[in-house]
Length: 223
Image (spheres, rainbow, N blue to C red):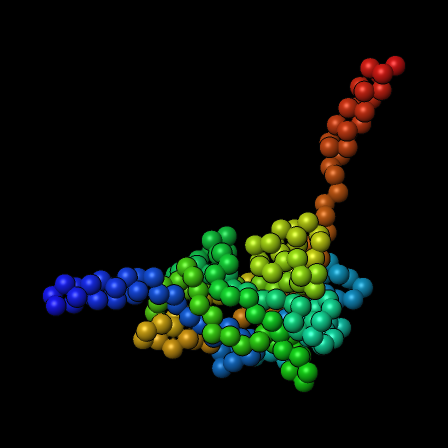
């Protein structure tokens, strides 16, 4: 009996060590309201982050001309089911953005009358944030997965950097009293932001000069 009690205690302790903290992943809640927008038609590389007059708390960023994710229905570019969102996280308050890693599950966006760039609510388990942590630093990322080729942020971020898809980040923020055995999953604040396509830098002058010199050398050798 004593061995059984010790074994049960060990299992309980192990479970508590590996338990994951939780948050309510949604951008329309008691902590605030924000929106996630599709790229601006006519200027696909424009990036904005900040609350507008329709957000809570209200801000001064103008979102005139932008469409919320999901406005065009479920499928296709920036559709509700083909645009994905995920949380990047690090344990502790006010951690640098560079320390944040993909932590929770992916989710999609609402459509219909709620198609205003609102995330489809999930209770998100954060793999690198402990159960009932005092605080965590989070960031919302979102991206176009209408091709079906980028189901995770790890894959999507590479494609985004290469200019293949549109994506965006909302900036880092701190959430206190992460959910777990004691705390309920807290609501999270956040800022409005839009997806955009990163422009690919053109080859530098030195790189072009190097290519030219190499071509000239090859030409001379052949001659």
